[in-house]
Image 1 (cartoon, helix red, strand yellow):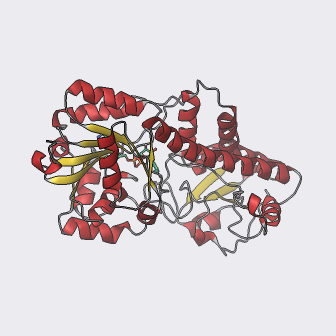
Image 2 (cartoon, helix red, strand yellow; image 1 turned 90 degrees about the horizontal axis):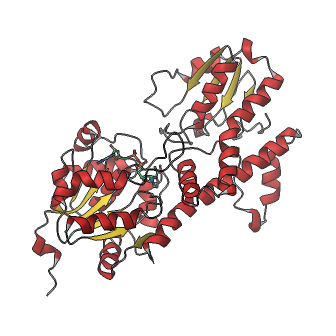
Length: 404
Ligand SMILES: NC(=O)c1ccc[n+]([C@@H]2O[C@H](COP(=O)([O-])OP(=O)(O)OC[C@H]3O[C@@H](n4cnc5c(N)ncnc54)[C@H](O)[C@@H]3O)[C@@H](O)[C@H]2O)c1
């Protein structure tokens, strides 16, 4: 007779490895909020302490009150001790999977992180990979688990939330679940049914590509809009007026995004992961990268044609990688800053959300001391800002057009 999970004597329902991160923490909070007993294992002792004090280590709208509730009633607790992995029936891995400085993915990041937890992996657990992985990593982990001799099912269930929307999207988006064994698939579907009724079953290989295709599709769309922007702008035309005009009551083009810095910890690196997976034969992906990463260079080049930057103080408004976020990881605002520091007399930066950069100045001071401003992040606080100096605003947050 099959042994039921209870017979393995698990104290916790879920443990999230990397659970103090941007994706892991909202997920842990969401499961706890739906009644699961959740542990977090994370190597960051500072983040673990913060979570146990019911303080978010970063901003995530809607998460703070739920975190307080689930920590207070003991449904969520964090630890820097990998032994907590042994106490949970479902082990979810959500550690970061960046590409390196040469754009190579690291296929062993997850197996290595799991290696540290290997002594605590136990019969009857379900191991869920939730990070975005290089295709084939699920199969690699399956092999690793088999070599440990433990009876554990492996599933790959990718995270598809956007930062800042986790606390609604975790309950609203369909959850893709995949596993090689029918038992693993059933367990994964049951686990994610705690969050939503909408479960999509794929094979692990399909699910790995589904996640990468999702992000890369978005990155390519942003690149198309950014290229259109540069074409129009070079001809003295306002891309946003053109985009508004062509999308009005025209559903076939409704998904054309506005131009803007397409950055952050996911889209770029996932495009590079997919390119590496396809032996670097990915013209669309590489071109998208060149266009999106080239936009700050283009903006500065245009400004240089109009102004003698070497005599000017340039102020950058917005350092986070996207609006209403405090996350500066892979933000193109910092690339813009580096380029401007080389060209301009001085560069001053401000951001109403970012708390981790000691070089930022108050917004009023940046505006007062600058001769020229660049809106680099579309924070809503900038809407309606009245400036008495020129500003480059590819996002059109100031409402005066996007021409640079
Ligand atoms: N950020 C997003 O919006 C987003 C959305 C969907 C998917 N993803 C994917 O989710 C994964 C995690 O991304 P993130 O933004 O949450 O990263 P993150 O850096 O914010 O979080 C990762 C966490 O893992 C911890 N960690 C690292 N190595 C560990 C180890 N060996 N053992 C235990 N803990 C460890 C870190 O301390 C950190 O708290 C990535 O694969 C990413 O591509 C991210």
